[in-house]
Image (cartoon, rainbow, N blue to C red; front, top):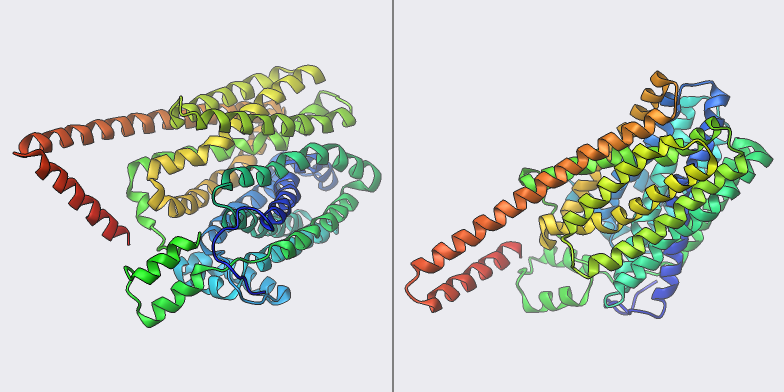
Length: 494
């Protein structure tokens, strides 16, 4: 289908895309958040340790983040006709070879050949395949490859382009559209907890996986509804072939009209101390964030709480998570508190909640501590990407987000098995929560160091500016120098 206009419509069919993205968020991230309901069932079926069973979720999280980086830099809209079957094979093979090649050619190749629609459909097929093959449950390695790897790849291929295309359809209302789309994760997680528990009780964990896989096929329907907009990527690709200068007037006009730009990936961010500090925080935070949803259900079973009440804990978690995102997003927009200070505060409160949660000895106390954790987790989700933008600046934000997801994936990969190992050694699921809380305290320390580093850097910049201004004989020369430096920075970016 040929798109007629490259500018964001800010409404119209864009709301259909938002609803589709809302559904995709629910059928991907919400499934991952409520997968803890299967943990005990799979562990008992294969008679494995908690550390061994937790690798299923660990693999899913890692592939989700790695694929997210890959998709974040390469999924750009175009007018090419799609072939889902061929796209499934090509995109899967490209994801294996991505880290052995330069990301720029891969991004250009996918830009020319595929669209958001094709990749979301591919993700739906991969997610279904992971769950459907997991139904056979041959052994634990089989579960790693199917429910772990394929499901993670499917979630990644669906989640990232769904969020991306919403931004392409909206400009002035982008914040509202993204908020509505991302709310699908919490809305579906609220209902999936009791629903998945019912499926397990009626059909067993294998039958539940098969049914959930069938439900995830609706991702393909949502992908079909994601009609492509005109992409500037094709224009830029043609310009690069004919050697059009980057500062040509016509080219710059086209770039302004389209919400998509093609930039070189900036790997040099790893040399910036502030980014390194924030990346370390991301690793430690990811090691902790995925532990509570995974071990919350087993902990409630160990407290002999009824299964029906156990599922409601995940619903409570989703509801307060959504509330925390809205309230923190609203508060952050007021610019009352510096974002890194706000993030440090929310991380400290999350760690406190996790330290207190193991003290619960009945459903009511467990639900209260779960609510505190979910609320502060939602506040963290609402602000942590904003902090990344403040750390690196918008010109390098795309590259920083990709690198941040790549680096953070190591924490998500290591965290659940490490918590499982501690649980096996202690013989108590409470130990996993203590580990998660302690690591979050450590991560907050890196945020404090980051804030001190930024303040020292700002003070140094202000001191240098005052010295330069005092050395200039006339204020007009100072203004001329500032203007020339801005032109140089602009030319460097272009």
